[in-house]
Length: 358
Image 1: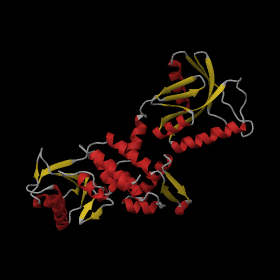
Image 2: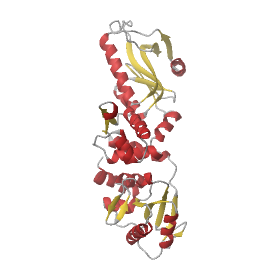
Image 3: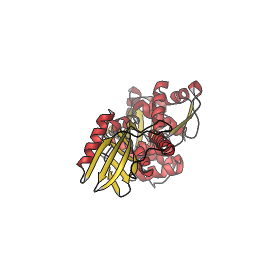
Image 4: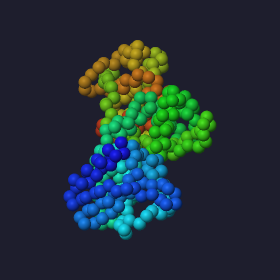
């Protein structure tokens, strides 16, 4: 894998105008015995540099920090002379997360990934090619924000600032401890979660809730639209419809949560009016009875009630009971609003600033 990545990297460099690169024997610290995985001599338009290269399968922010510590240790230990040529620490990987790329650019460390992204910072030599992450990385990141894994993220965001164990967060997220542990391990690689202790007493803390919520919001753009049903409930305004819906759901024991503008307004008022009610409703016989009791009629246009169909109680986590009405959690309402239209996004940012706070 390492040699294949290096060959691919050198091929990309050699295709650039006035660029030549040659693989050389790696350098080793005389005092520590540690070394880079590879070294390459690079010529760009008559200017020369040495690339001191480490090869990784994947790089996330935590992996980058570990690599930077190694580079710093090698620099302190001292390396053999390279005929006065400048040296550039460089990382080659199959995939590099966006956060890891940002960190590498800040630290002026070069990188290349199999998606074709390239950053080469050197004195009088600068190459920067920015391409989307490889599909395998994008798919892996996206899976964090889907299904039961997303329930773990939801629980973490609702508990930000507090320390917790795997079993505790698994119970709150309604998932297995194995699923919770897998998600937490991934988040540690992003440097969003920190840990203390070991073994059964190990605890974690979400130290970057804003970064996690930003990443979730970004992933919404690539996700499939939610399954929606649009209805018209006659002779009732939006405010009254919310209360009527809550009453009927309670009567038939249907699981629901008001979301979008109708919920955002209750958490952090901003809009003068709300014309439509959107509700997360557990599919099944209870939901059907609720819609019949409301005399809700399926429509293509002019809907005043939109139902987001949910399949499990995990999609209704952390509801709030406000004035006798069950609202989706502020985090869930924020994410739902980002998928809305009109002034929904404006209300989403207002809700995040006023109620969520990160």
